[in-house]
Length: 214
Image 1 (cartoon, rainbow, N blue to C red):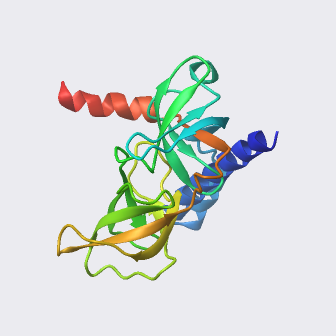
Image 2: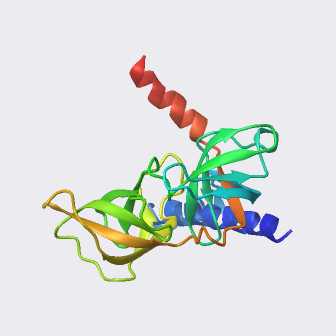
């Protein structure tokens, strides 16, 4: 019941963010008042699920959940914990789903530091289950240890979802960019319950973008 409640609270939180963004993008008090009274169709819903298996083998790390297609879960849905990003659904059966977590070399997502408009990407170098790497940020990017790392442009996660926190400078592949080692918000050693993200607009956006390849 607690996980179901968390799913409902997460949905309300993102609905409120959508309302606030709509209001902040208006210019006059009259329009702002109208925007507040106008219902913004919710973009995200959240499906609660439990972890039934975790495999940390280094190269093919995965997580198995006790919910699948019969519960509305599909491939490419994002997965979060109460702390932050977990991973992405890779495969589903009727009653189970397998997630590729952040701590898998195949995982990569757009990310940024809080209060910054510069974005890079988060991936995992395979060395530490508690840490990942935020790469490709400009050298002039200001940062402090403990700065929050958030999702940026993503087809899978709501924008500004917490990924982790800056831990230290890492090794850069390019002298023009910084790499940070970040401590992941989700502790995979203790992970038991998650929320699977259902984006109500995902199929519409996918169909529109697919027209560019026709």
